[in-house]
Image 1 (cartoon, one colour):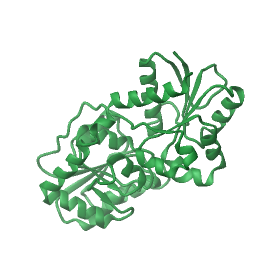
Image 2 (cartoon, helix red, strand yellow; image 1 turned 135 degrees about the vertical axis):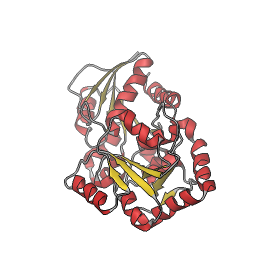
Image 3 (cartoon, one colour; image 1 turned 45 degrees about the horizontal axis):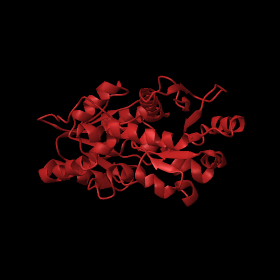
Image 4 (spheres, one colour; image 1 turned 180 degrees about the horizontal axis):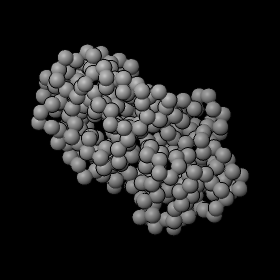
Length: 315
């Protein structure tokens, strides 16, 4: 079995997707018998394989490892900011792709964003979830959940803005810490403007899963995503998703999924919410479309896909 160094720019205790992915992958790899360390960078420790999350931010570790060990493999996992922001403008990110022996993307639409030579090295590993919760929305008021830290890349207030185009009695519940200046103030301003909107701030992971399960819908309005953990969780729980039509969501939910709205378009999002409230058959269509892809987000499927990539790298 191999000694594996797993590096991620996300620090210990961070409640973000990169840290969740690092911990989950380390667990899978240890179950397979490997010895795994997690750090924010490679500092020269002995290992047989380097796994790096984030092409640009982990570039120094990738370059140093390859210089020290030209015969040992590097596995690079691409994030949303890698794919949809950094690669076109960061020489370091592009160099990381050239160095890597294998590349993991977290949803299948991401393959279309890679040059053919890089695509040959890429493998899809969907992120999994195994929540104890099952979809159980309240019998009374219709509830829409928005899950994710408040950052510009998440377009976090699109669902709150959609309320101005809805007359129905419903509520939008938002969970996530305000990670950029002014976003806490914006959330409070939305609460003052419309009592149907509630911002709860950060919550523990079990509490967050509970909000997904106890909502009729989950809205994922992000501008870019590598492969949103929250969609994996909604898939496994059974909560229908309304998502912005962008690559990360398309790769998770499938191109034929009926629950998309154009980026930055709260009117279109409001129409979809209204359709879910008024047409039981539409919610059923969303659930069936998600159920058709649910198996690929199981822990067993992710562990198998990750093991396959590791085996490709071993002599």
